[in-house]
Structure formats: structure tokens, C-alpha cells
Amino acid sequence: MDALAVPGPGLRPGGTLTPATDPYHVYLDSLTSAESRRTMGGCLDRIARVLTGDESAGGAGQPWHLLRYEHTVRIRAILGEQGWSPAYVNKHLVALRRVLREAWRLGQMTAEDYQRAADLPTVSHTRLPAGSHVPPEVVGAALAACDDDGSPAGRRDAAMVAVLYSTGCRRAEVAGLALADYDPAARSLRVRGKRDKERMVYLTGQAVARVERWLAVRGQAAGALFCPISRAGRLRQRGGAPAPMTGQAVADILTRRLAAAGAAKKTPHDFRRTFIGELLDAGVDLATAQALVGHASPATTARYDRRPEHRRREAVDRLQLPPSRPL
Image 1 (cartoon, rainbow, N blue to C red):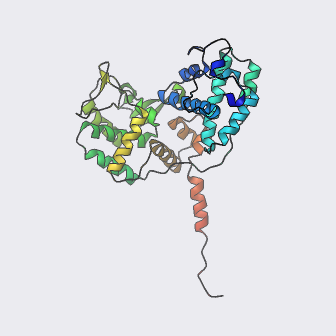
Image 2: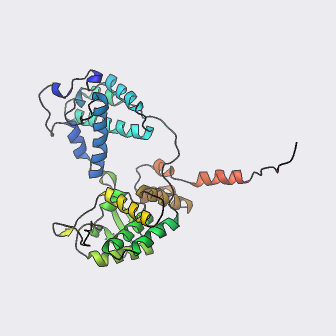
Image 3: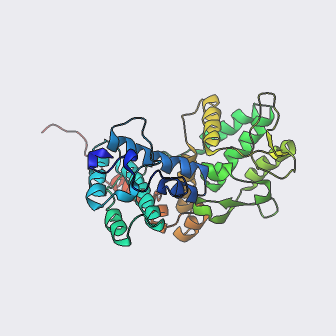
């Protein structure tokens, strides 16, 4: 971080930081999912590269504890110059604030220095929600592509598509499901979301049928509800139980099935925003929708509300374009 006149990794007072005393490692270790650790670690690594100009630099071992307000406000300005979206910049600022907080918790910064350095406003912006709606016919085409595959992967992927569409779960949440989380009598799944918060989601009858077809292949052994499958059609095991998948694997499977169906690419988060929009369109109250999808704030859920857009379109439909006539 020499660009900010902060001592670089070779000039750390008190000697080399160990993982146990490195705010970078302590912060990432506090995150509950591997996907969150990869995401926020990548943010801190990019901050380190941007500031040092060294493409091989990473966030580990950097002197985060020496940053002061004049440095962090400059970091915010530099991030804003990268051409990144405001939301992407704000994610990096979250990582920066959190690593500073761990430096304070480790006794490497005073409370005053931490509060001043972390006092960074987010980059304000107003944008339409990203992503796209998933029409029912696209979901049906993806399920048909799975049904055409007579292998165990076909049944697994059909169940996974059904769960994504009928629960709005995040891809990491689907990957983290265990067989014990599934209750067919209640048509429910116990989901562990961000910050290890648990919630109950519910499946449609059709989705339950898809899950049961998959379980007829998977079996009733304890372990991950959805597991990787080898090219030979064997379920991958870990410790004698079906092994868990990654969130990225869930996204890749969805991409392949949609491509096989000849449908446009959709992401698991497109399924999530579609689920929220359909709930709100159906008259489900905001608090219930928020609880079902595991948002910390109702304001986040409200961003997926398509009803104001519908009302604006209906208002414009009341207007009539005058017929053409010569002046």
C-alpha cells in the first residue's frame, strides 16, 4: 500500500503477522460459508492490488491496522475510479470496514482510529434491479431437458431446478442442504442462509414429487441432499455419505440444463428474484416474503416488487396515440 504512504508488507511493526493475528485471515475465518470467504477475500485482494500496483499482491499480510481516515477515504476514491458499478464498489467497502474492525478487535488499532477509518459512506446509486424474470415455460423446458436424461443426474437436476423455482433459495443455500433438512410431510426444507441464519421454506406438491424421484436414486443415507455425480453415474461420497456440492456447481448445472433446452441463460438469482416477484404479485405481504427468502431487511425484498412497474405501465395504457392526419 505504498501508494498511500503506508508501510508495505515488508515493513510491519512487530514482525511478520501470523494467520492468527492477521485481520485478513481472522475476518475471513469469521464468515460462515466458503462462498462468502472467496467473495470477500477477493475484494480485499483486489484492494491490495489496486493500491500497490502489484498484480500478485493479496490481502494477507497487508498492514490493514495502519490505515487511517486519510487512507481509507483515498481508497474509496480509487475504487470509484476503476469503472466498477456502485454496488460492486460498496461490496469492497464492506470488506474494508470489516477487516478494520478485526484489526481493532485484535488490539492493533485504537477504537478512535478504527471508527475514523471505517467512517466511509457507501456509494449512492439508484438502479433498476439487475437480472431477469424466469417465465414458467423456461422452467418447464429445463425440467423437460432433465427428464430426457435418464441418468441419476437427470433426476437430481430436475429436483434442483424445482427447489430453486419454488423456494427462491440462493445457490449456496441449495448446495448446503442436507437430507435431514427435508421434511416431506410438511413439504419443507430447513435452510441455512447468510450468517448461519436458519429459516423454513416450503415446496410445492410438484417440487416434492421431483425431490422424491431423486431420493429414490440417492437413497436415504445421511449427508448432502444434492451431491456430485461421476461420469459413470455414481454418487460421490465423503466419509461414507453423499458429498456436498458448491454453489458454483449448482449454477453450472442450471446453465447446462437451460442450454440443452434451448433457453436463454438464467442464473439461480434470477429464479430467486422471480420467486419474490411472484409472491408479491400474488398479494403475499412483504414481511412474509422477506421471511421466506431470508432477507435481513424488508427494504431489500421491496426492491424485487414488480407491482409499481405494472401500475405505471397500466397508467400509460390509458393514453391513446392520436391518429395521423395532415396539418
